Length: 202
Length: 202
Image (cartoon, each protein chain N blue to C red):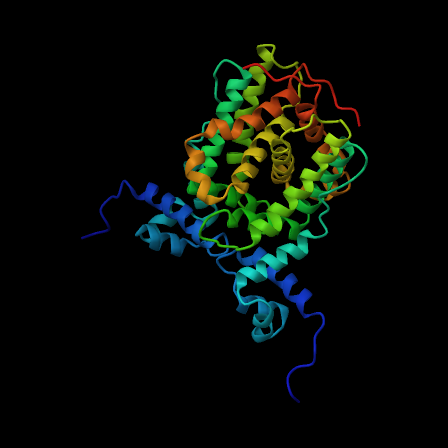
């Protein structure tokens, strides 16, 4: 017998194993050897596709964040932002989604060099979320030239902190009632960014 | 010679070593053995004070988050929230402060049981931040009974996301201009929570 039979499931199995291994070991213990062992594949077939463990991890994050819909188009700013916040909360409540948060937090320090992470994940999500703001400007719901960045930082960050403050025993209940969990934050942020609001005086 | 001489610097040296070791190895590689080696102390003197590595880590986080002032009292809501946001950004831009974020994110999954972490860190900070809201109610800047939670989640989370999105090469510049980095988020959140604002219509 020459070589192994083709294994069409190999990429998906390796990407699953990569995130599971990261969840167990963190960046410090994340090795091609450990991922290969967990996925039950040979290291050589992994290296053909992913020459470095950084590339493997970026691909794994990419695969897991793809189902996270960021650019919702419901016809109104509030609908879009509520849908985005609910998607984010569902993503963070998923153990594998939370692993992608842990990786992002680890990757913010210089000792972890995830080349491509910033462009492929952070920029992609920011651009998609910015389209929600652009459509709201187009509909006249927001003034032209409004800065979407503090809105999006408060939204992504606020949902992240909400998840962080939630005891694991309440995760299951939160999954069934996403909108109730995110509505207070969404409405606060929309009042803050809305054209009707006036700046606070210090 | 019986025993070692007393070493008054031992606790501080061990707590420093604990966070540095976590920064390098994450939770999976965080062991009493590794911390003792880094601190240059015997494991037996560590176990006298910290029977488990969980307790050691909670104490180390406690020591490092103590300089983070949360309950600023400047005389106005905007002053207090700007001061809190600036303190948070300075804390997150400090590599050891960022380690405490990484630990919090790791500890949100059930496989890492940091008993006492939630009470000693999360609850302590939430209570201190809530006092900013309570004083604003007392001054008439916010309506009685306003829910401070989305404001504080948006604030802590928004500053965290801002740090996450900042390339490490820009960290030094951000440290010298904290207020400019946090003001857009703070003003958006204050417009959102302020009594003048009206709820957005969906």
